[in-house]
Length: 624
Image: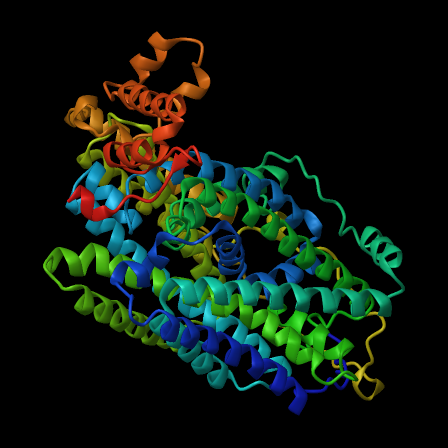
């Protein structure tokens, strides 16, 4: 193939380092601020869930930033550049995920008064199910977080000259620092700041890139001519990498697995002062997800317009597709010192927020699910110190996992798929508990193991035997206008090699779109779990507290009380509704005694706030 001469692309200069360092300084300062401000009233609950008095605004920012990591900042534009703008269909997946999370999962978690989502599993099933789910979550999150730290560090190192291990260490130290000092409040407010930095970085790249390539109309025309705007592909083939069905259906399962029942998300939501604020935070967060997605997709189109005649990846100017975005930034901002530093800050804002969220969630799960079970009589002071110690421990583990990720070579994508492969069975497990009152602990445990087995079988097989090129081949890229090195072509002749033998499942089961791994794990867990529950004897509805079950049948059979009662499987949801209505009528009937009645209502119906007509956080201690 031709040997091309790479154009000179400048590296970081002093001003870039100043801008980038400022991000780390502000993030660390927020942790110090909350540590000093609230040092006298810091209990373990205040540290881990912000005292459950957060409002919807900062939580919405935090949720958006936590799940839009550097993988999004670097990976999504590259995805659009190579495969087209069909990635924008994820806006439908995000919408479905937020609706399911806000209306199905959140009310149950919020009203249960839990701190860790895995507390729910013990309340609904037993300690064994809770322990199994907790261990899976801890291992999954440590692995994923290490890769989130390493992947952008590698890409930015090879393109900008930014020191690889320096960025890995700095990220781990800063996140651990402000998590340990400030707890959840520091994480949330730092995420809000990082969201602003992330959007500012995207917008700066979009404005500069669009102006250099003839304006938005020209960018759109180039994308159309390059087939980058063929968004709606209705092919029902599940082996196709991205179609409207794989993105909307598979994407919804994938994001629900890592979002709807994820400790990091739920921990933020239950830190809100009322259920109304928690739901509002989720819906505001949806706007943030759409904004970041739109910025990332359009960045990919601008990047294609810029390199449509000389693709840096095909020409070997870069060694991996994830390096396209930082290469593009260093190219277009070569004459503007400081601006590349803003983009690097943008990319690392996503990384910082994801790592910080993971460390805080890991500390919470470990403390609530493991430490408090072994040492139930810990003092508040000791509990707070243990929580901070867990933040330090997980900060070190996640940073160390980044070093291990450097030895994994091309398995970064496979490791990201593991996040979905673990998330799907976990989604199935929580769905069993919340939607199906008949599910028992044996069915839950058996379903979880079956779901993980199915998901990892498909995922591991797809890694060993990748899908045929016809199912995942990128769109055409050109090197027509690239400069040949010394005006010559280097011709190489490769000896013909026989195609490796592929097993029977390689072109079917192992070639499924990676977005379906979560759906396989979830449905496998739910179906097997229900079968085992019926075989071993379903749980009696009257033995289950109504607050642990969401009666979704009410939506589909709202006209028939008899059908609804039948499908409640013995769970007395009606008794709760009658009690709430009775208390509300007392509040409205006697406004003169509003304060005293509100107090009585709160005492008798723990968690309900008549002023906002929603639930407020229940103290977990009141249940023990």
